Image (cartoon, rainbow, N blue to C red; front, side, top):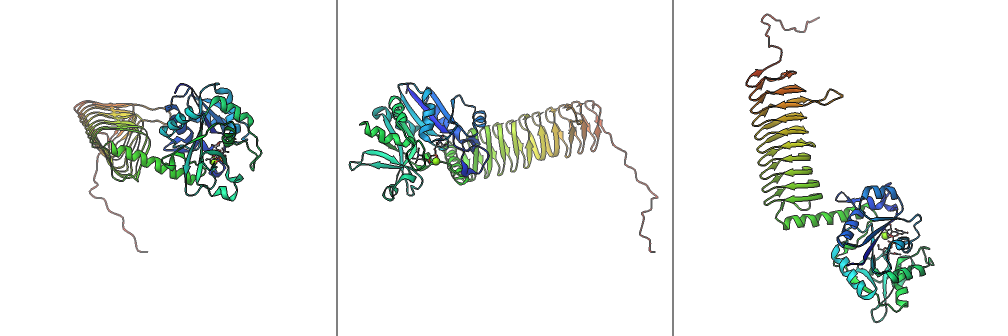
Length: 455
Ligand code: UD1
Ligand code: MG
């Protein structure tokens, strides 16, 4: 639609979150609730998105980082007042959609049908029918079932409180009329607030028919006021993501124990075991198997890779046909070529591991370049840091680093070199040769073992 504007209300503090963080910054799947709403609004391609902020305004703007028009509402005088604050950003003609920063899972389809309805009739309200309507504004209808107004919980009489059809808060209205009705609002009500919902009765007074659009599922319009509701919506969000992944071919061993806090691109026949968390932007190739209890953030994993349980991978790349874990830690800029093996209790940071090379046990590799088909023995440490500066280690092809080798960087190990177990390597090791630096073993033949003396 050409003339669409969106206003998002996000000025409230969210007292019941018991948090110093503004409510709309609390996250669902690692993304602030307000960002979810803005992204959904953006998918409608409106001309303007005006976001009304108040409590924690600077933090909200800085965290959300989306190209919207920020409007400040210094005092929270009600939803009607909040929209009034955004009025100067709305053109005279067109339709405005009003969203809430704490109703994070609203979807494009429901909004599109609300907008279409508002285009026909000037004012449309998104409604729902719920078992327990407590706290919501109730939709008032005349005998002929036409909408005549909305009454807030605090202003409702006992009969009105029985009404189960509720105002979700989300409405769409013709700009000209919206501007007119907002000017007519008063705060003559139980909460002494300027209620946006009062525009319904004002429209009816102007002879405008107000139409409703019902949502197919309640979670789409569920608001978050406390941490319990945040957790409930997070689960629904996660289950929806899990469903999408399974329907596109991913095997999730238990979709209830799965968390995607970002995006996951995947090939075919991917298997993901329980309690694995994906964060940021992750890509996994064909036939990738990810074990239980792994955390993967911004990773690129090629075909036929197995990540075994309890591994933690961040900002790294794993080449095809490699094996990682269990209990492996790949830190930022760890790049594994194809056919590599990274075993248990191995930490790799800012290093390249060449094709076919293995680092299987209890090892730290940092700021290191390793060639092809090299084997790093158990307990090897690249000593890359002198407490002030970092230094590089270069290890060639087909090298055998003996167990317990300390490689004091900067240092180079040539192709097909071997280091003796327990060596402290401080100088370059020439290719093809064995380099060893350890005290020679010595057995004292006539040594007498001390025994306890009886006093
Ligand atoms: C509102 C509706 C109610 C509806 C309910 C749905 C009104 C008067 N009532 O009530 O009919 O059933 O939502 O959840 O609109 N906000 C501002 N500035 C303000 C006041 C509010 O930005 O001055 C923002 C809040 O941050 C929040 C949203 O508007 O995101 C809704 O405000 P809230 O006070 O929660 O309204 P409700 O009483 O829940
Ligand atoms: Mg509310």
